[in-house]
Figure 1: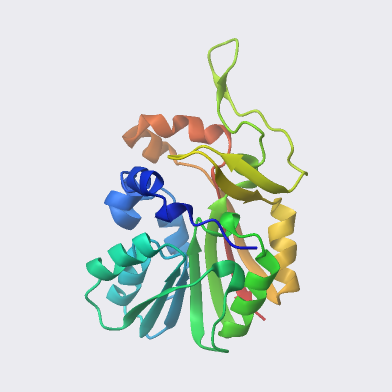
Figure 2: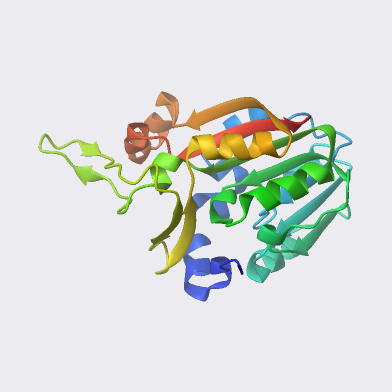
Length: 244
């Protein structure tokens, strides 16, 4: 199956480019500090960023001592921006469909992926290819939209009778395609349960080191009050694993 390349859609790309994480980089992503704490040292490590987008993490990794970084993305618009914004010679960008990921064996020490895997249709192939590309003990840190976020037929907060907001949940165990409108109509994501993510990692010879159902802290909500509703359900699932 050919992956949907929604990030090369002109209206979607224009909308996505306005997000704080697109404008401010890693610091504009509220979950970044937690992801950063899951990462091993990047010093002298060979790193691959899967779904690299504008290249923010790639540049951060070399600024923190990485020996080399390969950034992979399906979107030519994203890669064009990443290349334009990157000066380091030890960062290389490559266009690939991650559902058909192909990497050299034992080529990387650390793999990173932010909010990408929920777009993939063939998670087993992706994880198998990645496991082969990591050295034994190599670390994989990633984030996805939380399955409670991706499951509902209509993913949106609704107002309760008392004025509070709630997140209706249906279809959690009905895995598969979800079609939503986000900056553009017809955005396709793949809903999977937490158990499916964990089981797929184990089947690909990964061991789970940490799992975080991320939500904003009280300090973050004080700084950005609009994030208060995100405490009603975790928006992101963060996992650190290593190749056995």
